[in-house]
Image (cartoon, rainbow, N blue to C red):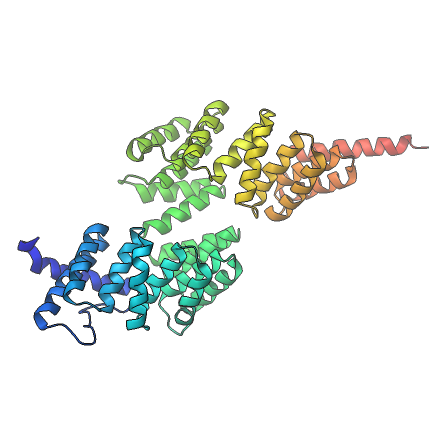
Length: 442
């Protein structure tokens, strides 16, 4: 490192400029000295170590970056940029308690330093204090021309307070002012997904992708969303192009495998997952995809085995809990375990209609009809009149002897999926029985 210090410092200065522009925060070029200022030789030493730290941080060498920032601080103590950088890396390493006093120090020294505001907000969010994070960043994030990073952090604080609609409005307004910002388009899409406004999310993700076509994260999320929405050919084509010549991440490999499986290309899906597991290990994402592919191939026991392994690694996996519960309920086996898993999934994701449908359907299979009707009614509202959910609701109502209401629920489902033979048969059978019962009445 000694023999290359001059060249490395020059490269670091360029990295700092690029990083600062990307974040929209001040900090490019030479860092200003503390109020009293160190001696010139010490300032040069501080700048060199700070520059090396920025280079290492950008390259993901966080522990090494922290060493450089500490050395910079030893030459120029009380320097806002150096203290902020040190806290930022400590936060990235999960050392919240080490980062907190440094951020408090820089807030006193430089209260208008926007990078320090950002790091302070990130610290509060990491500590599970979204209200405090909101208060820390709001004034700066809502000022005219606020950096997009601060707007993003305010939106995250709102989401973590459960104020998803407020976050959506914040990003919508910012996207109108900053229509060429891929970051804002992506963030707005993320909130739209939380609001289950999926088609609008696709539009924003495509906008982010157009504005920054080389950003892999944008393309990956867009492709996975398209696959989840049943636009499989479009999503698989997008994702295949994105990962060409590279090793897919576990999330990308899982999505691509599910896409192949939906085409009936089971061997191709299993081959992809085998290579991904070799590269990344048996992660919950890959095991969940393996379970999905096995289920599509009619191998239920192998599917359940894969999802149980995923659940053992990540006990709060709503996907695994919901899949196992629904599969068991459909088969009518181990219903007590199915109920336990379904209840855990709803506790984790109470606003998701499809997760609640699994709970309602499990209760139906257990013969707890009134409880099933209550959960399925709520599930139908939460899911926006999904045809399968309405089919389940109609079944519960019919079993309770509320035939007219059952027919109405099935009819709502048929309006969503006019080609559903199952719903049409249920309506015709129930209507016919109702007519025959009416004819037999004196």
